[in-house]
Length: 234
Picture 1 (cartoon, rainbow, N blue to C red):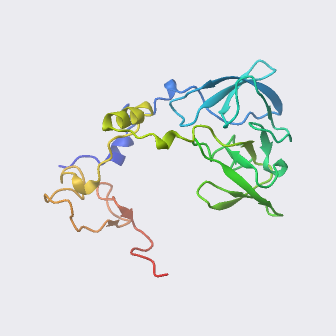
Picture 2 (cartoon, rainbow, N blue to C red; picture 1 turned 30 degrees about the horizontal axis):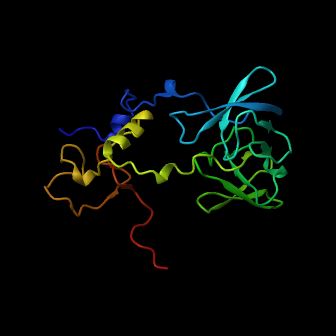
Picture 3 (cartoon, one colour; picture 1 turned 60 degrees about the vertical axis):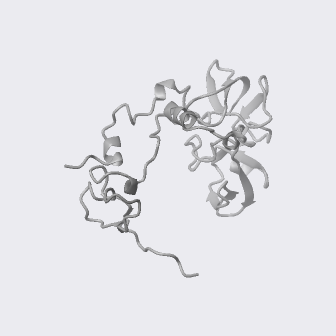
């Protein structure tokens, strides 16, 4: 009798696959109201790759935001205004073309969903009748509603991927901080009891990686009922 696949074990929700959110400082999202604040501290959170900044608000509350490059403690940031300065949060309709932004909202009011990793930024390309055209870090261009908000600047921590891990133990502890499964082992390297692609003693099995749509859960691995396979003829 075979073992459960990794995706089946993950669905049980045990501590092995559960995110340690109790160690995280909190959720990072745009403050819903228009206000100003003072950056009181720059902090590190295990749940985010970028450094965060704590912003003290006039009403006594505090909120978390991604720290852009060049911002320092005691700087003032404005949330929801039309002043284009580093760290401010503005609607896309008020941001000039060519400005670098991060933590964009996919829908107005969702608090920011994309361009949140360290060293990343998007750029306002053009404003049309259909919406605001943004060039994402993947170089793909996407149209956003003018009411969607974004923060000005480039997310800090751009040199993070340049530092080598040097040994597998360092990578293990980094993945362990967010409870990510490490190391990743391909199915053809496993034993037959662990994976449908495993066994037969050699690394190359020649088994097709296409899985039929009506395959049972223990067999549905690889490309699940793909629309097409093979290289495209351009």
